[in-house]
Image (cartoon, rainbow over all chains, first blue to last red; front, side):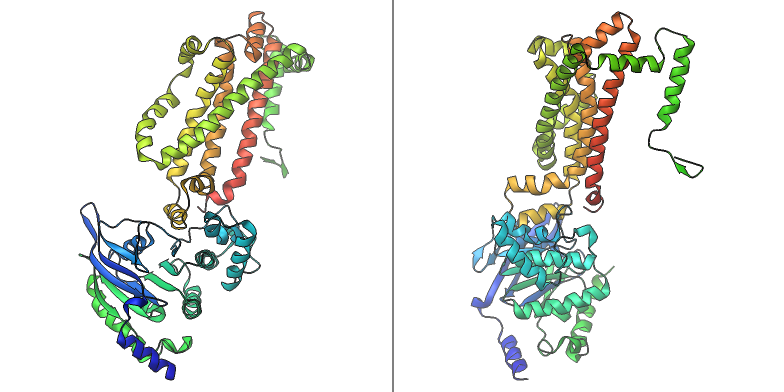
Length: 268
Length: 250
């Protein structure tokens, strides 16, 4: 109970400048005539999970890829720990919607691939990969190939790869949308544990309202045409509750309803 | 194929065609088709002779060199064309022209440029094999899953690492398909080179046997050549099968 109060007090106070891991400042991005993002500004508190939530076409994946350095913004800038982003860097790692595993490499090599690209020696990177393979619950599958794994297990490989490079910022692009419902629920619970245990900043793109409210410390609701941040919601009371009580919490239900009310007009 | 519950080994239909050949040969309809048995007798008679071994080694050298250059140049060029818009615009028209051009007509030009020796034969072989390898590699690289490319970039892959560790492997099923067709075309290239440029190797044997109406010798060398080309092609098809486990799930 004490914890919950400190946590909500902290939320009410708002994050300090020093506690901002990633800030997006006036970012615009056009694809030809299509405005994908228009003058977007957003801040991501350190050590917390922020969701980017919105209907398709609101530019949430575009924003995530700009933060990753995979796309260049037309105007504006991204600051990670106060330093501007010019391209991909070791302080961010990416989890892909379609897992993006090397189909010709086994689980061990896939998990260690981020480290391999960074020139870490084989024995050391396999040590570190083993640890994260264990963490995501894939021990015993080190020698398996991606086509032998289920969708959920493949995404665990993708997650372990992103964790093993030990970036302070984790970017997740609809990571659970290609796995089945039950696996997804398990993932969401595991993600909460991950946010609590790893001292990392998570930026999480999703189109599922329930998922966003369930896992997030902060939810940025994005609206399309022109793409903008319509509101930022910080759930206060249920974040500290155990995973099985969240979905029954009145605040959880209220926030889900509130977000749906503001999004429903934008869904074709 | 299955007959009455028994599985026939692959290519057993060749036996039927072989039998037909034997019958036509035994009927003595034309000097052009000696009986198959006679061809095989000749085959075993000439296969150890110095003339045959010399022809085999000359042909193998030119062929292997030509295939080596086709692969060693074709794959990197194909990968670069698949990844770079500019290179693609520059080179694609030429590749398309050469892949469909009647290259035999170019051989006299090569003779003028590079002389009448091995060099011209190797270049002819390379020209026959390389274009389809470039095109297939390019096609393979262009269909690489975009998120694999982004994955490599997001973990900070150097261009060299991205090529060697991601693009090459992701395009490997298509590359092997291209190499298989390229190698078959290179067999054509090496024989045409040997016939047109300088009369050496198997080309010389063909020329010798055909002009002296030694038909069973002619067919014997042809069978050896077909068998070699077929084995190489089957070996590459086997390699292709080995990577097919991931070709479907890229």
